[in-house]
Length: 329
Image (cartoon, rainbow, N blue to C red; front, top):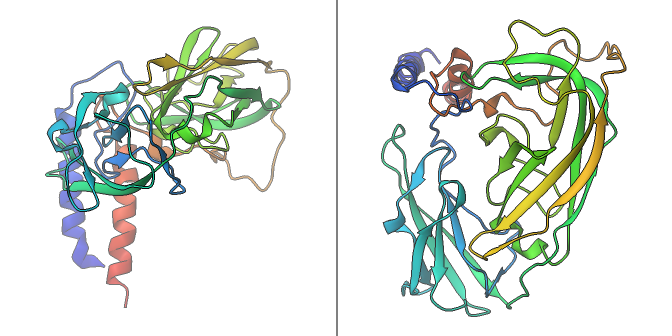
């Protein structure tokens, strides 16, 4: 295990140096991150892609980009499929075939991410099969809000990767997509507004067919797309500037846009109330400072601020575990 320590220290020094070089920013804490790699917006269950899909979306590593010259669509035998590549929402690249896909035909989609801090990236590829053409969705689904709960949760700052434990009232939005929208979900990007003000957003594929939002920690506002809160009690001097929502009644609006379809889905809304009227019940089994289910310190990301020690440790921890396993007999 000790043989891996110098390498780990070297990586740590590199990351600290990288953070020192990044300019400060008022945007959310989001660090350039190529550990996840480039991904393709496709059905997670391997379902067929509608033949008339407006565009195939390539999502870059966090806050990085995709080289548009490397985005290609090929047939099974390697024959290129005529298509154009254009910029999409949230730094994505979108491949638009010149003609609809052919139902029953297998395809290969390729792209290479550009990573300023992570070294050269290899070409990523995935395969899929075209299915029958489907009518583009005209409905979105339904939105509800869960019963408010008093709990402790992590509040992330706007300029550093630290977070503060806060107590407050929370509710979780629950989304049920319409049946006609489900086949197109991987290519829809989302935003949530509360009382007309931006709350958070999710890139393509950010909501699943069951309405879940699996990647809330990667988005700019450092707030979960579907997790709404107000901080109760006296302000903590170490708490980031944002305190979430004010106590009272609010209206949440979920908006979805199907990439390159030239249509915005009808927004869906729900009213809810966060009152700060009840105290947090004591739970002897809950560790102090424990994050609620669905929150993650890995969400700490940096859009230009310095890389904090918390972010560094969060990045190095998985490497340390892997190093320990490799050294074990």
